Length: 391
Length: 229
Image 1: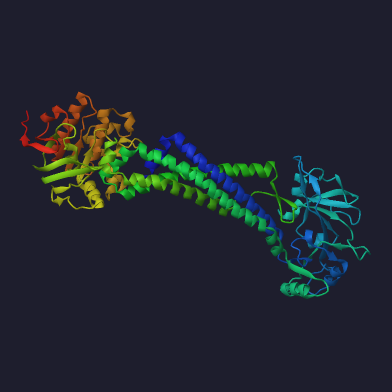
Image 2 (image 1 turned 120 degrees about the vertical axis):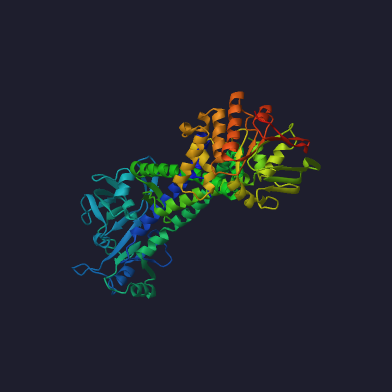
């Protein structure tokens, strides 16, 4: 039969300061773990939700992002009328050539960051149909107007509606702010470049976004583009493209786990120290319980339970701190900047996911179990007669 | 009946051997109140531990009621103690974070009683020791005498046949010591418990049926009956 939980809880309460100090150490580990996991979750969510299943990203073969890609006018023309591509009601293919630049822009906090500027033609706004204006208006074609994603507008100086920026020897007037359901596009500035190619065959674009017609064989279209020997392009679904961009998140996730484990080991020693002190302080109590008839297993279980309660207390504290910190980061700082493999910066809103909570919970319980096991084993191994003499 | 037959207990301390008990034999009939007396280091606590099933003899036989304690495993001894022995310690050994009634309930956690029944038994035990009105107090809110009464309630709550007490008056003033000895006497006379007590307290002789004197691990007087006024 187990000792009642209230025995453990009240014993923890009796040693308030020690309990708070140890739980505080565990809470800090939980907090840092939760913050990092929330960054990873926010980043993954943002990047993966940016991709749409019916869109393809077309890049030069060997390029892993728009930044490294270049597509000529001829190649663009070659794929524009391929079968399987959706069209506007007017019969224009939903194929958007896009030109990517990455200038440094000043942040409102006083720093400088690489921001992705996407040069688009009017068809681009129809290809990216999830882009919605939240302020101002859409740009007029070919008059050097730009719209700015809401995350970029919040983070960088001079990107409000009515502002203008100098870029590529031109002054661009900002006429609108857009959102796109929290996707990476919200960290970008979109310039309406009218026509990317004009009559100059040497000009090109960085990449192409296109929409696959409903019911069309997407894989066949991808194969067709890849197999065309004239253009040397590679198409992939937009979802797959952004999953590749999220590879940094996977590395960060692994680093987070390693860091959490290292911090966890430190907190384990804290918990162990507290529980060893508890066993020493309560030796006579343990002797009495063993004399009354409680088995070694009951004593072991009781002290491990106490240690797990201690770590659970730390977990609750860590989660509460984490929720407050994440709320503050998202609302006061408008999220955290994160650099993608393509070097452009995206603004990530931290997200507390059930998985993050579960991982932090597992870490806290692990700290409690390991930190409690050795002291509990010492308690269980006490000789009854020796323990009673310590009274 | 408690039967101790040619019991020896040897401890090893490094290369030294300490003979805590040597060839002790005695019998304690059921329902008697006995005191084990003797100077410090005489082996009386060792004998009490053997009778209570907290320790095993190096040689000889310890039998309590129908149960031969020799050769029982640690778990078997723990189960036997839980059902048959009540413990009273010099420093009470109450759990400081539990109230008086919760402390008394602790041994009942090892039984199959439901929570409500456990509470009823604990209240009854506390009323026997005269502390029904102090049941919600924590140990540090009680005097030494009251704490020892709670410990006695804890010892009797599972209705064991045997109660062992190790210096139960050692930490009490004269008035409280007399009260506790009277209470132990009452357990013997009214509830027919066998009470085995280790004590240095000479007042105890007035309350017990029998004393056993030990010196250097040897029983120096067998069964001296004590006359009661």
